[in-house]
Image (tube, rainbow, N blue to C red; front, side, top):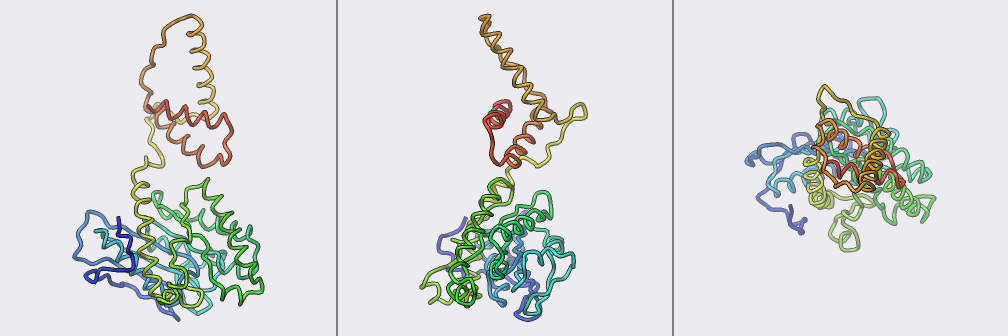
Length: 335
């Protein structure tokens, strides 16, 4: 979708802010692509969480994401709400308005989803929890709970970004020292393992500008991205997320509709049917009868196969032989 040289934004792209964040009062930024662009649909992106960018960098990240969308020829709106110094549990509070350590206010997760109505929602959190000496497994569990509540709409694509490296300065300011980096690696490992069996996507921290050159270029403000670095990150994220969103939209609907005459059978019923088919084929082979292809599968069976495949992939984290055979047979039945 995009040129690999993401930091060279076209000077002709003029995105605008409908709502501006700042370093002291507001944490929510809302940016839109130029009105001169024409498209049949508007893509809505949301970025929610804690850390990642400096307090004055939310506007830059929103504009960077919008510019990357516009360069791709897409019309879109971007909502960015990243707090400073809030725990993952605080992001899930019932209060519709949150306040971070800088005094900036903004919506909680549920309210953010209501306002943004995102097609794609990126969650960034966990950095503050690690700095508070929480165990890596506890931080990963809280992130899982946060991600599990991220469904503004049934078709919303949710992505989780790895807890970013806050740099040597964060290690020096923390009593954990180098142990902070170790805990970050452990947290990301736990989170990536959980995401492999669930719907949210995993976005590694490699998309961040890093190294001495990025520091010299002004992409960092201490342990957080500067506005300049936030714009670079926005372009890189779009290059990663747009192909994933396109594939997500091409998937079958989450809940296949069934005709009134049938309901989705249980997995046990499918496994029993497979067993009966095996026995019938074995008898036919023993009797020397030619194999005759069966009639096309009824609509209810095709729909049930789609639902059961998805449930098997999501629920069975460590599939046994029987479950793997069941998934394979369901695929064959669809053909």
